[in-house]
Image (cartoon, rainbow, N blue to C red; front, side, top):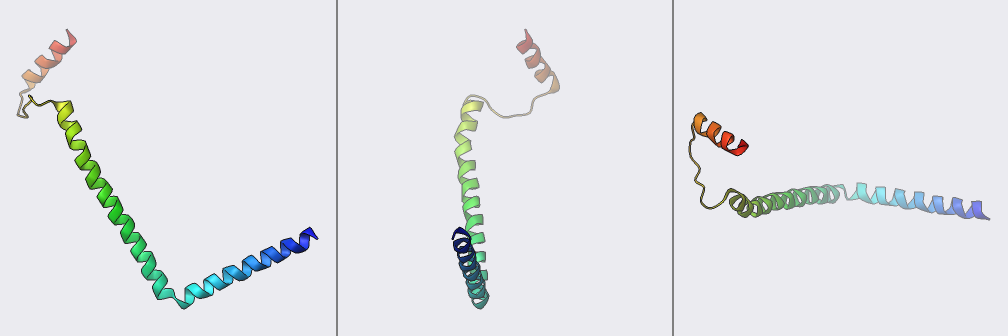
Length: 88
């Protein structure tokens, strides 16, 4: 009795899969439009996450760099002096 019910379940699954495939073919334009919309929504969500992540990093950058430091051009000798002082 177990094999007969297994065959019935497999047959019903196959019929269901064929029905879904036929339905998808009948409405192929809507299916393609839905796929395009889903891809665009995913890309938009990724772009929003990247922008928000970039904005969230800015305070940590200033906290790590410090408020008193000023970006500028340093000579090679100044960099070597700082490195030597750090080693001492």
